[in-house]
Amino acid sequence: MLTGRGEVHFGWVLEGRAIQDVWILPARDAGPSPSLGKWTFYGTTLRVYDPSADAWHIFWSDPRNQYYSRQLGRAEGDTIVQVGADGTGSSVRWSFSRITENSFRWLGERSHHGADWHLEVEFLARRVTTS
Image (cartoon, rainbow, N blue to C red):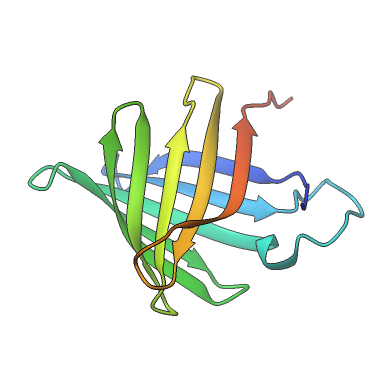
């Protein structure tokens, strides 16, 4: 199990038509920390709502690792589920749950053959105050 601390910055962009988040792992102020392997990244997600599909078009870009994914996201009860594919042809599923005003849980799963999903990563995020 790898454990580390990262940064996530969220905001409305494109005149309020999309949400962008920037993920930085490990956090810039984390100091020396053990390697997070492939989970060391600087990436950004753009989420654009499509009212005709009642879904979000999601574009993930991580230029550091040359990893890109396109997904379609919808609410399933209290969970937001994003399903799509990455550049390797694998199916990916990202699920956001336990969503509160100050925290959320994100699971990243992968399926190589479209049958079984395998958990790759769990992020537990919480809002921190900045000075």
